[in-house]
Image: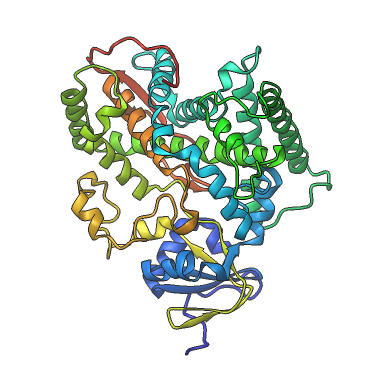
Length: 467
């Protein structure tokens, strides 16, 4: 068995490839796999890094040899300062327990009840739009998904008299993500007790978030009957009602960690996917026309419902192709090798970091013909069946695949159908739109778009409800 390192890009003596990596992380990783093959070695300062660029090797990391890898310390440190020990940051037996406890909240019959909420909030957002108005569509989509995740996660608009719960939590989450992104750029995170501007901002955000969530959870506990909290139809109810094999419920701190994790994941990833979808549609009028034709034929002016989704296959193809080109989760959290592990004929030494990047896999020509082209038609059922398991992985894979993937896809398809039925969105800026790789893959400076009404007869917005 070979013991030498796989080949990779040359770097400097001190920093290795850190400076090249930071210039454009997704591009650096993609070009590395294209140039050096299925397993690439490079160094980020003192971090010895192995990039996996083949579905079979990804399976080894995420499934077959997953017990030899855990979340990298940098990810745990940065994300754990706000998300605690939730699903995104926990490992091992504890993660498996939490996954089992959270799973019922995402049962298909449960999340299907949220379809109407998603459509209704999309209409509320559009009520504030004016024909020919120019707006930052990334901001609009972020606000929309924030309202939806707040309502479906903890029934935000019904729990405080002030009505600002969702905004408070969203603001705290935005501050956390901004500080975390800067920590990732630096490659380290200073202890919380050091009074830097970023630490003060993150600590203040955590205090605000915890205060609101403690009030919500306490309120649920106070209305419990014989210790049993009421199922109010949201995801928090299910989390509070879930019991492990020992008959134990999640304690309040763990509930808070899981809600923070689900809010962060549900807030930003879907909004980014939709923002990139609008950007791509604006550049491909033939795809936009085909999308509109499907919506007009199937919906005939009525609001999309859960029952309509199977009849909107092209709408789903558009979303899948947008998430191929711009996967919000462009890279999975780094994996730390707990022991020597064999990958592709090489030994990945204990203490090394392994990277798996959906962005890289989605742009490889051996799996996707014309990988830089926007071609939703490629996502036929036959094509998807022919793809290797880990060639397309917008939600990760293995035991840690995103628990809310079905929720996210239903949300994206319903929101795209609701908005595209009523509006066309055209680019309204001359400067190029560039991606920025943070925790998620975002448009660097937003996307300015002009919204233009389409001639469709849409039924009035219904009352918001979980029914």
